[in-house]
Length: 257
Image (cartoon, rainbow, N blue to C red; front, side, top):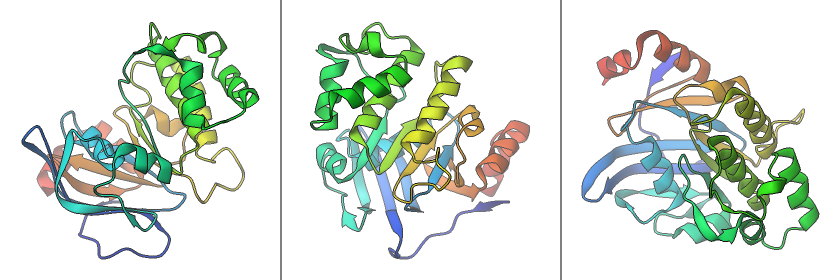
């Protein structure tokens, strides 16, 4: 069942993230309007929406990138108001992000970056996960320099595995990735989020942006949302939402709006 969204109340016990009345602009252009969103510890939420709807803006704002200006509203993470915190402060609190199109970082090897984000993590652990992600030969190369689409996505996951965030934002994990890579990415993402175990990790949560929905073949998401014209319009079972989008596109959401 797909439902239109209503405004939530205050923060409740068990909530990891609470977004209240969020309005965001980018370079003077309003992109997000009156966003109210919440998720509990251990939840995985999937965000759908057409191109230009504001999906990436939403997670980049949650992560604290300065280009995304909060005009109004609050972001509460683990009971802490992070609305005006910078990226590094949010990362220290337990947020992490995998970009849709991460930049090339010349002069910094992937291994050096992993040591930085891992904050003294043991080399054995770096090598263990690099081997799982078929990235051993990339450790001494500059970050993302000459990497294929699949290699870039796997390198992003490797960084998150070293950082060990509690809340992860993943922007289109299937983008530019072949079917062989999406299987591996799905499996490792499950491990990152503590979903590869019999009992899910109650502390690991994620917001995943997807266009194709392929990632849902590998990750058992809890909730799905549709972002349309800068507003959250619908909520429901992510597989039901994906099925509706495949049949009718976003026409029904425009009707609700």
